[in-house]
Length: 95
Image (cartoon, rainbow, N blue to C red; front, side, top):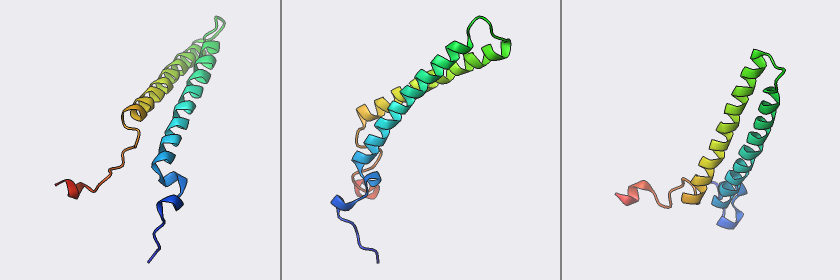
């Protein structure tokens, strides 16, 4: 039988605060990726481009918009449910 760890000895990644901090880093990652994708896409859409490069620029802009949407959705999740998806009591206790 394995000994149970006291709450103060739980690893960081198993705590609720750990998950919230990881989600905050995910928001920062989404914002940085969106900025990078938009800059590269705008540079690809400069006047002297071929059709394939322009298509890549459009898809890059679409990827940047998806990164922004990802960051917004994660922010809303943190705003409305900061403790995460974990239940405080078992489901059979509610019934």
